Length: 120
Image (cartoon, rainbow, N blue to C red; front, side):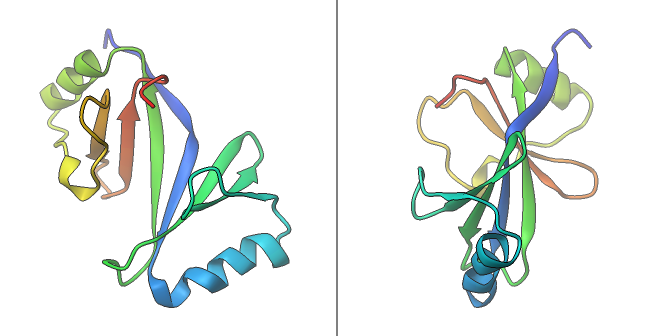
């Protein structure tokens, strides 16, 4: 592989409405992680060197964990993944016009955002 892909710092937990408040309270009040709201309405928590984002997801019936990957050249990395049979799933959540990244899933159906570090 010529295109380097590395782990990102963001982990998103997509939580259905009936579990959302209890999940926020778990990380804030029981575990004691420091919350932040830089991207409200999502609530984030410092998780060591990572950021754990809790997003309310009305379309889900159970929680999902989504991970982030970085690449310096999204187009090249996307081509590499396509050659390996990895299917893009950009329809799951809009990233905005001109965003240099996209969505993929691993073979176990875990969602990953693959993006250039300065895409936002």
